[in-house]
Image (cartoon, rainbow, N blue to C red):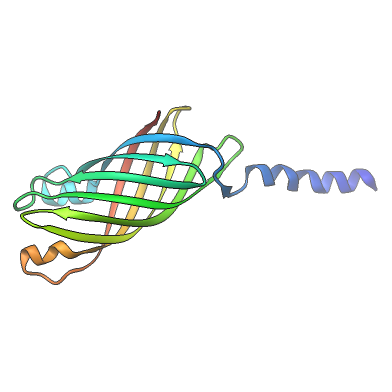
Length: 161
């Protein structure tokens, strides 16, 4: 009977170690981000750079430039949220958090929203990921449009430092 109980409990214990959980490891990451949809649509490069501290909580600063838009576009944002992981060796990172920032055109406009993403470790130091944002964009008045919430999607390529 003891052996049957051990055989039933062993897979549960093993899965608990590899399941979805809060991230406990720490790192500083630097990444390059690219919005492929906007880049193709506008025939230019919507590219940015990020630096972040990752633990259970992550803090990120980023700058994104989209020079082909009328009078150019640069945003600076900060993000704060929770990091999760799964797998025995923490090869996958999930994160969700809030964003605040400024959009710089001929004038400066505030922006705020949320983000979520997944990073996959390619090696012990290099990762590739995807990130989605849903931001209130107040810079649309630059074009004479109504401000609105806008989805964006990014591909991230980064390194742990």
